[in-house]
Image (cartoon, rainbow over all chains, first blue to last red; front, side, top):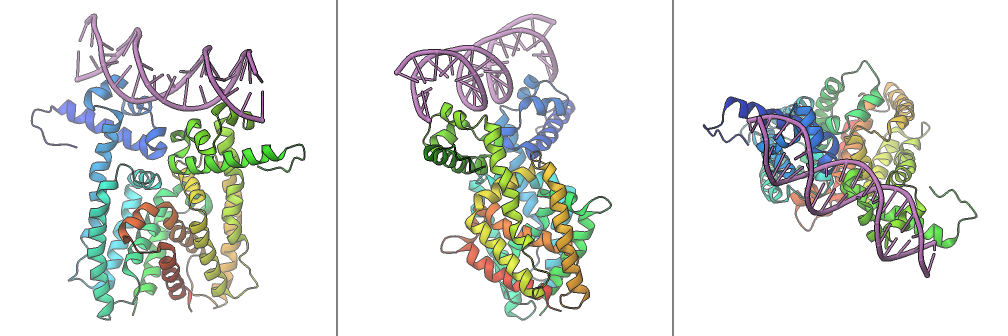
Length: 203
Length: 203
DNA sequence: GTCTATATCCCGATAGAC
DNA sequence: GTCTATCGGGATATAGAC
């Protein structure tokens, strides 16, 4: 993580950034075990030992990528505002999450790779995740009980938002193969999901 | 694949089956590169060279697992009946797909692993997949145009069904961590998805 | 058919010159 | 800070005895 160490030169910052960018590319496409330092080094335009001058190990590079990811990933949920208009708040969350899939598909796939394999390197982050989801589920439940939202299990509503938006990044090959050329999956998904959640949530 | 070769003895069939079962366990949890023949051999209760007496290579084991998977995975969609009652047909498809996630989470994760990595070993199957989806999307579109189903992009409706049902298998760790103990994710998902698709599809 | 032993290769990490 | 060269571990696959 960029700790803002003032002793770090411009070159160091640039190389660290290039390594993390290359590592994201390779880890998200191949998984942790599937990725090799040779691939990452080639992608970053550095030699393999030079990678290990900047990071202690392959594991350390991966850990640093994951470190900030969950926070970024959950930021839109954190911003769900209890004081806002219920349906608009949720629709805004869906749209932001879909935009994140479009803008950060590799991060989505890195995350999916971890989850698929049982979240071995993310396990200690899961309790915090549960706390946040429980809190926001409480907000949604209150909205439903106040008659401002159709009733429905709020935890599974949140799962649905995750599943429907991340699918376009994680299964992008499949989506593009099925739609064929001449489609923008994310534009179409935006329209479809607006419709879906409008119908699901209206009282 | 069990080709029913009559020259194959009972022991051979039993061992092949044990290897494929073990390989499914390991490949789905670790990915292709992450899995080792040692793990598969241990899980199958055989020695590593004995594995390679039954299969030519690690790749061959993996290929055989994938070979039948897409057909099994798409069977419920194939059964979507143009002559049936539209909403009931789609709800039945959703329920069957969710039951498959419950009964075959490892197969779901094996498939997800492949897709995440760009479907390198499934690429030639994608055109057939597109053809099937296009056909069924046509059926759904006709239902909508006949006023028997709410309008909405049928391709993205199918993506939504895949995403919402497979999520419970692929992200099972996360789902369980968020729900906490004392929940049956699949039971709850069944109720939630019934509700979601009922609201989405009703005219 | 199944095993032990091993060949061979690949990968992460280190040594050490510059 | 960056490189070439290389060590050492682990993985796939094979050889060959039983």
